[in-house]
Amino acid sequence: MSGIERKSVPEEILDATCGGRSIWLPGQKERDDTLYVDDREENAGFVDEALPEEQRPNNPNYTVAPDSVEDFRDLPYADASFDLVVFDPPHIIRSDGMETLTGVMTKKYGCLHAETWQDDLRRGFRELFRVLAPGGTLVFKFADMDTDFSTVLNLSSRSPLFGTTTSRRENHCTKWFVFYKQREVRPDTERGRSQ
Image (cartoon, rainbow, N blue to C red; front, side):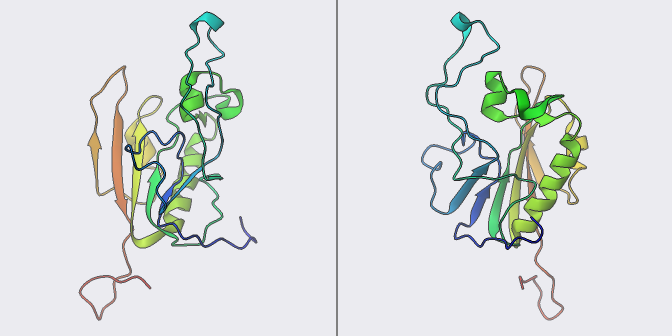
């Protein structure tokens, strides 16, 4: 977005890859202080075209309806816009990326392009830390379906403070990691301060 004026927004929280907002708890999916963005939209009732018609499960209530369609690698928001950023990028890596979304899993959660996924996530981390305010928190969720966690975490210029592991099922595991963007440390104070 170089050369384009970046937007200021009233929201304090950014979900940069909201999908169907499935990680949000009931009652939290429409918060006024949160901006839900994704790089695509999916209407309710989509089906898995890869299966024979009689075997296609319907997803009547699942939609991908972001407040704004945006690319997490290049957001139109001003630096330090958000106190909390949620990053739950696609975990599926395919040679054709998002171009041929047919399965329910890829329609629900999207997928990364095999040739560019590392650069895409690296750029995503960089961009999300740019829009994260000093003293802010980035929450990152990822499943090791097609790559390992250490490879993914090495794509970030920062290390997470801590993380958690859910139980392993179907040969993959989902983990959550929490990153903190430090405030500037000023010599005249004991604690850091934002500028």
